[in-house]
Length: 190
Image (cartoon, rainbow, N blue to C red; front, side, top):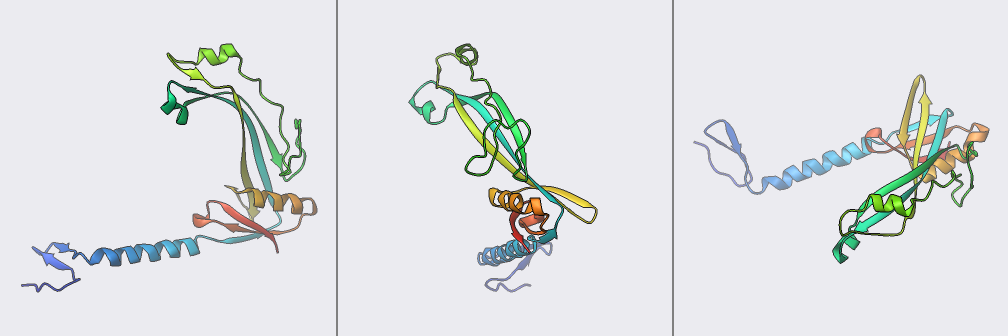
């Protein structure tokens, strides 16, 4: 027979371990250590002079539809016309109408504002539409090449600005990859 000891695994019928109540803490410790290890090992540094940062800017018209005060907090949203423009390395792109703004980005022409007919066409029974709202969105990406491998990953404003400053001179940059090497979190001159 097996003896019952506190915080031990005891076989039941010889095929399944029995976990005592204290066991979850040690499992959580292992999971926490594994997560920390993944986070530490998942962040690599890349040094290259072959890179390109893009900031895709988008204007979109949106109208909120609601039926009562509760819906006004969480309305049904409809999007209408949209325009986009890709900024590369801080340079003025073809088709830019305004800019650079306070973040160094160039913007396209505004999309056509939805008409009252457009808004009413999407209105459902007993809904009140809001006035059209113009949304601005920016998505940042960085492409880099090391050897023959090229990767394109999402990034942030700080990385985009560092590339915009270094790109005209071809200065090599060190990029810090985020957990799992799925994002670029930082750029610095080496």
